[in-house]
Structures are given as C-alpha cells and as structure tokens.
Image 1 (tube, rainbow, N blue to C red):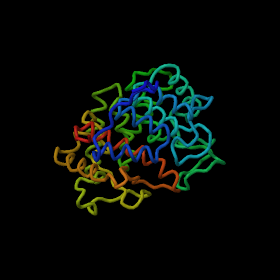
Image 2: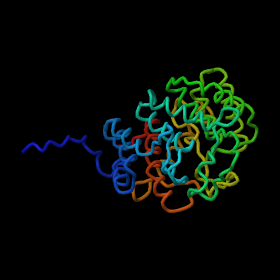
Image 3: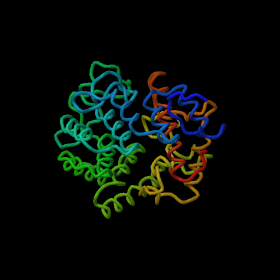
Image 4: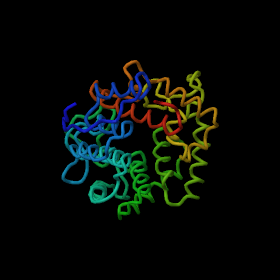
Length: 314
C-alpha cells in the first residue's frame, strides 16, 4: 500500500463497549477541546493537541473566557473558566510553567479583599449569562470557585504568592462549614485532597463526612432516591452520589462510604450512559447550547471516574 504520510492512529476500542459508544458521541457533538481530551485519555493521544485547543480560550490577561464554561458566554476572563483550564492542564500533566504563572497573576488580579476568588467577576456584566448566576458589583469570596483551584495548584506543586492567602481562606471556609450543599462539599474535598497539611486535611475531611451523612447529602441507595433531599436551588432530581465526592479511590472522601455504597453508586453511574453514548447533564442549564456543550465534559468525567475504580469500560 502506498505511503500517505498521515500518522497512524491507535486502534479504536471494540464496538459496543462504553468507551466506543462514548467515542462516537464525542465525535458527533463535542468541541475540539473535548475531542482532543477524549483522544488523550482513551486513545493514547498526545497532550500537545489538548494544549493547542485550550489556547483558543486564553486571553491576554492570562485568564480564560469564550464560554469555556458554557453557562458564561462572551470573551472576558472569569475564575470559573480559568479553573476549567487548570483542570484540563492537570488532566494532561501540563499544570506547570509560564502558562500557569500567568494564570496565577490573573487570579491575583480578580481576587477579593481576603485573597480568594469570587464565583463571577463583575466583568461578566453585559454578556449572556445563565439567569440563575448572579453578576454582582462586589462579589464575595467563594469556596466553590477557590477550593478546586487551590487544590489543583498544590497537587501540582505550583508555588505562587497568590496561594498563601487563598489557602488560608480555604481552611477557614472548610473548617467553619456547619450546613452546606453537595457542590460546596465537593469543592472542599478538592481542596483537602491536596492541601499540604495532611493531618489537618484528614481531620477536616472526617468532620465533613459526618456532615454529609447526617444531612443525607449523598444518595446512598440509587434505587430509593426519594429518601434523599435535593438541595435548594438544584434541578429536580439533582442528587449527588458517593462517586461525586470521591472521584478516585485516593480521595479523602472515599472513607465516608462503605464498599457496598460505593459499588452501588458506580453501578448507577455506569447505567446512566444513554443510547447516544453520552452521559446526561444533571444540573440546571439555561439553553440547549450550554447543555450540549457540557455533555461531552460530563461523559469524559464519567468514564475517568469508572476507570479510576477499575470498572471495565473497554
């Protein structure tokens, strides 16, 4: 056969496996970034194309915009977009160097008076935004925005002046939680899983685990979801499961659940793959486009979670 000069691709997974079904869904629906991420995670693709695709969302200020997080439209940099970019870089082992240094400078520029991140920076005003996302002139510090970013930077041994006060904010916010909701707990776990003070992180995680069980914030029996309340402001049926808190067996949150509880939740996750090969978006969304853009992200995360627990996904 004549040489074509085209690079050879890794062999596709066997047909009808969860990965093969998800692959077809991704090629039909995903943005270039998620296509490249899927190829990296499940087909042996390189990291460079992921970084190149991510660059389309990067701004001069070092932050990220352009609807990287679909509920925020428009070009301006936002903490949520930049946190998403950090997750991508972490996923491909590229969370380091000058790119991350510039991101930390951006995070410094948009931080609140106590050195933490707001959920939405006021620069979003004037651009399309999900109606349930308030854009405030003087937004408060937010653990949901700050905790995952601080955790990612610590996990990748990134050291920047911004981290000192942001880390202090996360400790204060996590250790003062008395009543919470699933996304806030998940943000706390993202911080605690990589916080440098491991004994302190373990103690804080133990307390949060008791809070989660006491307030039934994790649906432990997927066959009887009526037993578990949905948090105020969440979408109908927007339950959170053990795998949402403990994304990998190494997470501190894994100790919150028995082996049977975790197995049931993973079985439930695997069963959520839909006919088109993708996983559904369970949270509130405000227009068809953001929901469609989010589904490939959710699909990749579901496959990675199942794989982290050794579930055969093909």
